[in-house]
Length: 517
Image 1 (tube, one colour):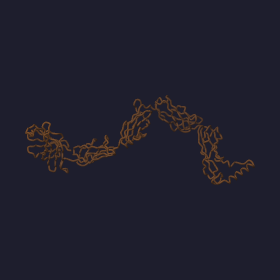
Image 2: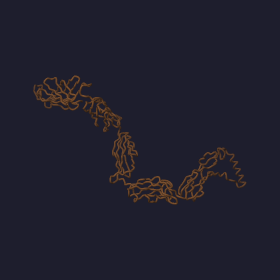
Image 3: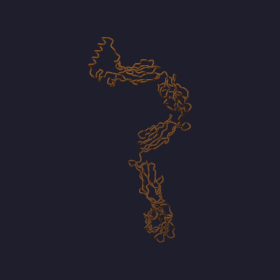
Image 4: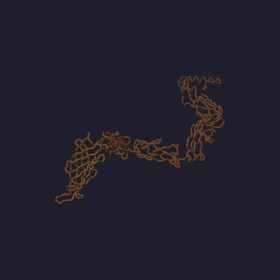
């Protein structure tokens, strides 16, 4: 409801009437923006107050706001407001418009601006309402806590309201109509288990709110985190898994953990326990709950940018193996050691690869072998070849598995420049063995060293030729030599090897094992 003093005021004497006419005439002579009441006037024409009606309980408060308007409904900011209560036994009002309910009844609160006023009726209920409880903070308290202050928040709490703990009324400190405090002592906290809390307003009226849970939990004795130590490349993340334990080592559920990093520039951590390497450097992640904590060591390292696989290209025989090597490099090209490598074959029907990079030929063909580190892929194309006739007509094997000492056959002495003879030993090493499947011929070249004692006195390169046959069913080779008096026979050997048994004259036989490079 709005009222204007201008609609009820009357002069009480002729002198007053004359004075009023003079004031009115003077007002009419003002400019359109002056204190006149025409269009564009800044004279207060009405006052609006919000809220228009107020209902409170004893002890509750409400704030009123008064706004002045001109005759053309323009808001006039900056005017001072005078507040007044016509029944301070029921409700008082401050100079800022804050209303405080005192006792049951009604009170008229008036807001006045430049002799123009509006009244608001405040009703203070005689009956306390039923309160509403919306939160309990904290809602978990440990048995090791000496004293706990529980904050209870809600609405329509009355003076004299109590907290009801597990059905038993407990005194509570009244803060406001929306907040109470409950103090729990050692007797309340010595036994772990669930509790309930409600708010009860006193009579007249009053009532009890719906309860909310409160948990009294066994105290935390220690905190353990998995992993306890981790190294992350820049950009990588890991989620920590913390556990709270009691004195017996049993896990305590329902605990909330906090996470902090000692070096946010290198390693960040979220309150969900997600650790991310932002840069290069160490950090300590502290995980806490119930007054206990654990530390996790995290190291940020450069990320892998390249993976190089050697040899490239690569080849292997069916049934044979070959070793691949992967190197991880950073953005600068520097090698990064100790990075995990995951090996895989894009076609295991052609070749397989194990966790160390050793490849086994399965069937003739070409396959790509991948090495992955930190989601960076390095690859090599590998050809799987097969013994026997085919597109590859020549197969070269190099070297012996071991140096072989030739038995004392043929020349066993060495004559020096003075004509003196010395006992000598021939040693075979190195060389190549070439098999041409298109012609069925073999060529063998190796080196013979002649020693007198430990002194090397002569070196000779020896070449032999012959023919060979091949059994596809048994992967067996057999040889004949072009040299007279020399017997050469094939032997079974491990994949990737050729074994040749050779004898000259009546001397003992010598077995050479040639290996594929």
